[in-house]
Length: 76
Image (cartoon, rainbow, N blue to C red):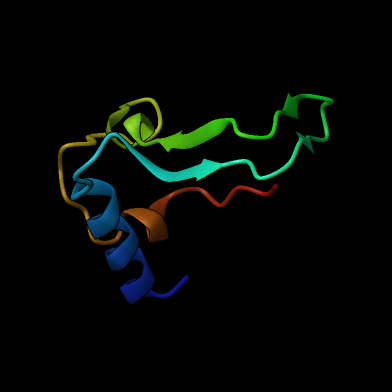
């Protein structure tokens, strides 16, 4: 990851203006890999509350431009 990438990700993380993003409506039935079915017409969103969760981001209220460079690399 480049330093500029980390800065942009951190800026996005700390300056969210909503509680959710990626609001979608399924246009057909969708079966996930675990067997869960999202029915046609169902609404889905991605919650952003993890951005302020100290178990995910230590000191979540502090802007740290290098946060994503310094995070342990995870696979998967």
